[in-house]
Each structure stands twice: as structure tokens, then as C-alpha cells.
Amino acid sequence: MSRVTADSITSRLELAPHPEGGAFRQTWAAAETVTLPDGRVRPTATLIYFRLLAGESSAWHRVTSDEIWLAHTGVVSLQYGGDGSAPVEGATVLVGVDVAAGQVPQAVVPAGVWQRTVPSAEDALVSCVVSPGFDFDDFELAE
Image (tube, rainbow, N blue to C red; front, side, top):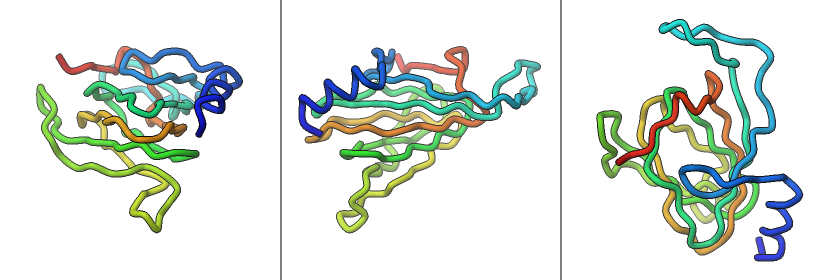
């Protein structure tokens, strides 16, 4: 994705800065809901666009639901590991569409597991599905 294309995508998709880094916009939330064990209600799933520019990263963070990363263009170096009070170095996957180069078009980060992206040489656009649905109350940035 060229810089002009990245700027165009950001504008056309109406992306806004995300607290972890990158830019995003929620595009869908399921009409069906689920009641969590603590009584909170969430959509069964939510969907966002998430864009990272070349050299940009996202901070260590975790959510209380499973998160599925789906590649559209470019490649994201996704690291995840640890479900305690702090992240640990764990698995790294390249989320992208070039399967022959070892990239995977989708990756799953289990609920409660720390994750981040590290800088890549190219811009990337992915979608993330979170189930049960994402809410910022369920989002934690590492200190």
C-alpha cells in the first residue's frame, strides 16, 4: 500500500487513531447479544478495520474475548504471549496474504492473552473480529 493509498484508505474508511497505535473504525456489531458471567451484556461479535503504517506498531494490550485477525493488504507482524499480569514474548505470526512467503491470512489470539504488533516494512490493512464483542471496558494496555 503506497503512502498515497494509505492516506486515501484512512480517509475513505473514516479511520481514527486507536489507543494502542494504528487507526481503526468499528464497522459492525452483531444484533444478537450474550450475557457474560459477570452480568455485562455484549454483542456476540464485533468487526473493525485496523490500519498500521510501515514502521508503526501497536502497544502490548489484551482483551477479554477471542480476537481474529484477517489480512487485506500488506503484512502485520503480530506477537502474542502470556495471560498473567504482564506480557511475555511468545508466538510471532505474519498476518498477510502471501502464503508462499509464510504469511497467514488469519490468526487467532485467545481471550486474555497479551498481543502487540511490531513495525513492518509495509503499510497494512486488516480486519479484526472479536467475540464476544469488543468494548473498551474489556481492553487493557500494558504498563
